[in-house]
Image 1 (cartoon, rainbow, N blue to C red):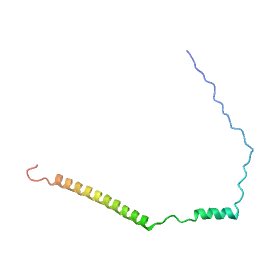
Image 2 (cartoon, rainbow, N blue to C red; image 1 turned 120 degrees about the vertical axis):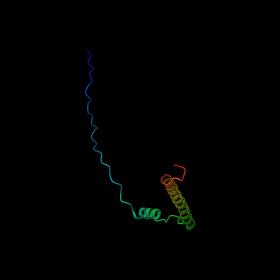
Image 3 (cartoon, rainbow, N blue to C red; image 1 turned 60 degrees about the vertical axis):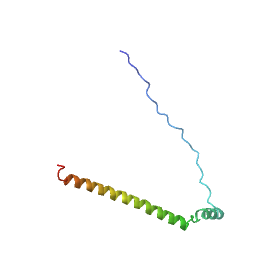
Image 4 (cartoon, rainbow, N blue to C red; image 1 turned 90 degrees about the horizontal axis):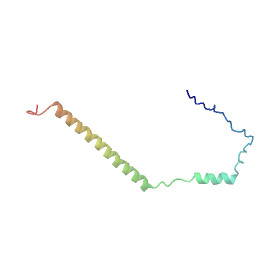
Length: 90
């Protein structure tokens, strides 16, 4: 009988690091003003873009509602046809 043996895996730990990373220096007043200027800008709030978004969302909502309601009407018609067959179709 042949027995295959494999060596046991050895756990290798990474070397310990003793290097400490210094925190960045506190920003000065000029750097704070520059950051505030970048993030304080108002995004482009164009009235035309807002109206276009409102209009397009209303069109999409209308299409969704019409599709949902027409689907329900078809189901109701199919159920009515199954429950009340026309005379002579029995």
